[in-house]
Length: 121
Image 1 (spheres, one colour):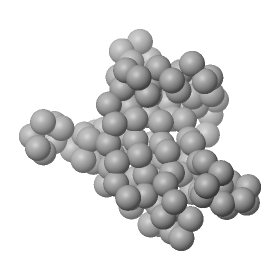
Image 2 (cartoon, rainbow, N blue to C red):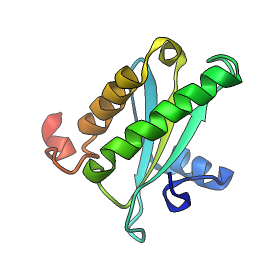
Image 3 (spheres, rainbow, N blue to C red):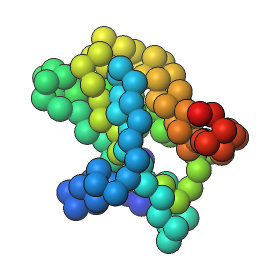
């Protein structure tokens, strides 16, 4: 993933947590906020130590990055998105993680080819 697509600073994570919207399922939590001044989305990944050892956490992060890479053309630009992995992700393969992630993005209207978020509720 290119540097311009990443959220790395703690202040940016905290601002997204405080000012953004959140949505979750059993495997993942998504925090997102719109940023009008950027022309592409950015992602931040968080996988806590409760999930497992470093190998497990890195595998989950690789799967999430790969999922974003595959979904990149469909994700709306001008959003900061923070993904927090929950405990059930340790038992999932990359395909299941991608399916869970795309479901959350669809439900929140962050994919380009989806209806408006308000029409889903």
